[in-house]
Length: 357
Image (cartoon, rainbow, N blue to C red; front, side):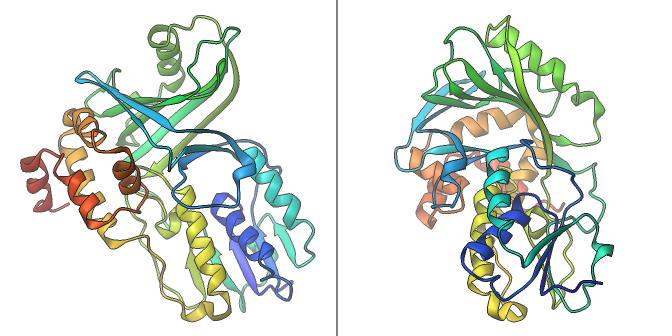
């Protein structure tokens, strides 16, 4: 049975990003890598979006970048513009093609559908698959989106609608998200922050159709692509092993208050690559303990006061554009954190600090 120096469990965003980072920096010239991934083929299945606060290797996979974004609630609307940190969306199909084309040229990299096909006794393992059954009774961000195309030029493709809370909340937190890729093509997504075991919230197709027809006023459109997903808004229980590092969401690379993960994965991959020669002794990577603390408080408020969240998000986004972007992207300093915190309803958050989960 084949043995490998490194094994990556899960060939999704985190696993492929790490393999690519190692390969393009010549870290696999004299080392072997097995990638465990059950899918038969790679095709577009996700759209990964983020503010570009750091450089990454996938500019050629970006569908579009925007400098302006808006948020809407029953209390009003607010628009922000940031030239320094554009909001970008990556086409997972282009991303998969780019990485797999590169990896296929290295004879030291092999793909397997099941880990039972290889011997891992002497391998260092990078795992992107959750180690335990995820609790659906906890808070999740779950969503479904469609890329629609219309005949006429009706979208303003210079601005995204990051959150539109003017929709049925059902005693949870619900918003729509619209990314106009062109003047006649856009991704429209319904997003819930709620317990994942509430089946009454999962009529995604009907929600999207209603929003497109009634809110966007589009009666005739074509669906080019559909995506769906669910992100746990809690950290997994990690077991620390000397020959294993968890990556991706399994490695706490998801920012719980936002669901943003892509750039955290890229920075984690770079960190691993920089320390690969001493990987058994490397310190655990984290994007900041302060964000973990702030996110836990934020999610306590979300859980206890879902009806207040549209107003809280609107308050938050009335900060300066670069301040809110840096805060949501793990790049803020103490002063910027304080500016965001002072926008929040103080008594609600003070009570959340002292509440036990």
